Image (cartoon, rainbow, N blue to C red; front, side, top):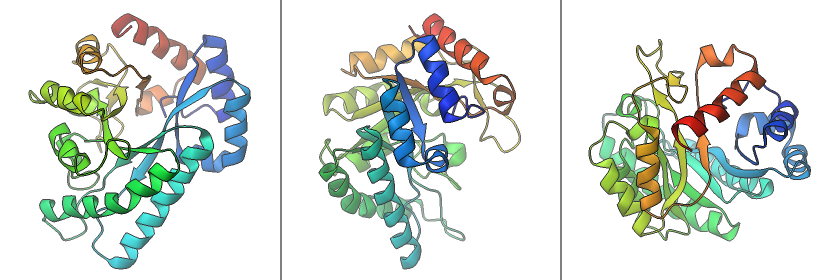
Length: 265
C-alpha cells in the first residue's frame, strides 16, 4: 500500500532491484491482478509475502451482514494461504449505524473470532488484530489499544489469534510498551508495522501516515520494545499518504527503504 501507484509487476521488479525480499500485500490489488497470478508472480521473484491485509469489519448487528462478513473473512484466509503468508491482519470494524455500544461491538468481534480462528488455523494462517488510533473508533475500528486487542486475542490460542503492532496507531499510549511485552510473552506479536505521525492531519485523516523520519515517532525505540518482547519477524512499512502516492513509485520505494535503514535499521 505504501507504493500503491505501482502495479504488482512493477512492485515486484522494484523490490528485486532494491534487494527487498519481503512484501506485505493488500487484498484489493491482489484480487484485481488475480490471486493465482499474484501468487506465481511473487513466488517466481523469490519474494516472501509477510502479511495479507485486510480482514475484519466484524461488528455488524444484522444477521445477514454478519454472515456476509464471516464469508468474506474466510475468503481472506484462503487468499492468505494461497499467497503463502501465515498472517491475516484484521481491522475490526467501527460502530454500526445508530449504535453507541462499544462493548457490544467488541463482543461481536470475539464471537466472530471464535468462528474464524479455527478456520484460519486449519489453513496455516494466524489472525492479527490491529488496534487503530482512537480517532477511528466510531467508523473503522472499535479496538483502539493493544490492551483491548490482547483482551480479545487471549480468549483464543496464540496460534489462532494475536495482534498487529503499528507505531502509527499506538505511539501515543504510555501503556503500549507494557502491552507489547504482554503480547510477546504469549507469542502474540504476529506482525510489526511502521509509519510516522505528522501534523496537520489531512481532511478525512485516513491518508495521513507520514514517511519514516518525518514525524514524531522514535522508530528505533519501538523496534526495541518488540525485539525485547521476542519478536524476530519481518518489519513492514505501511504508509497511506496522498502526497507520497502522487510521486514516482520506484523513487518512493527506494526512499522508504533508505529511511528504514536510517531510522529503524
